[in-house]
Image (cartoon, rainbow, N blue to C red):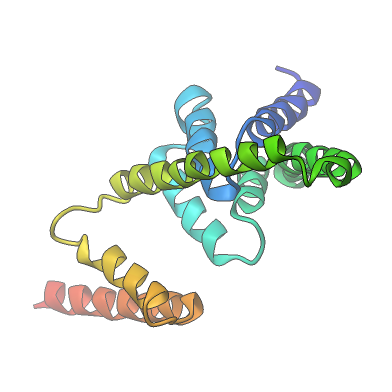
Length: 185
């Protein structure tokens, strides 16, 4: 495949994902994973999970960060541009279109009902990737307390995710030091 086609393939893959996913970045994760891991084998599952962890910890939308990482892995900086543009352009077009016509229909009862009907589907679209990510991250009964605790800390106690990420990094470093010390014995 020519270099030119590879760039357009990146653009089209991410444009399709951006155009047909409702619910934001987290709802796009299973579609991105399906395309880049299963269908096209651009990344393996471990690479995808590592990339996703980095994408989540970086500022900006997770879907864009993920697209940029995949594009960079495939074709460097230009690959990032094509995949990033592909994931952003559908939302930009839709928002522009909605902004132009929504003002005329915002008080229409049918439009209000449509948006109320979409809400539960959006919640499901966000919940499904969380379950799939849990499987890929090898969450089980032994370590399942970790994501539950984190969710409760953020939700009930209002702990900033920044502190949780920093704490997880510190715990990871301590665990690595402990394992290395144990292996030396």
